[in-house]
Length: 149
Image (cartoon, rainbow, N blue to C red; front, side):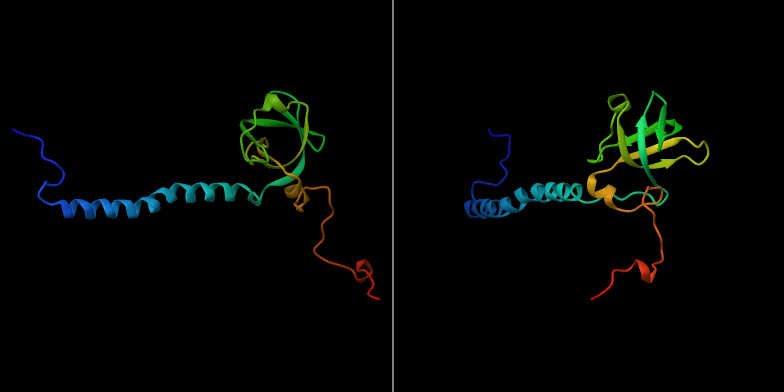
């Protein structure tokens, strides 16, 4: 006596063949779904990062466990301070102690401590931002324009 029923009764071989054909037709569609998802993630990593509007530009040097310098000015780091690499991964502070980086950074309003900093890639550092050394104006003089000949 067979107590375990089969998925399809043996009297329907056509139905079993049809089910097998449908499964074979759907296999390429199911196999391509993970590849499309992975391509999306990799594509977003190659683009520029979005920084908060309040982020400033400066030169950062980690000098101690909770101390740093921004543009040569000493500043305390908040207990939850996060430093992001150009690939947007977290950087441990002790591994970059004494090194100088061009960063975008946020200062915590209530304490005045450094809360977040992003180490910039060369292309990100070329973009103008408030707090950078470059002089920025929203006006232009005719004398600054190059003469047309």
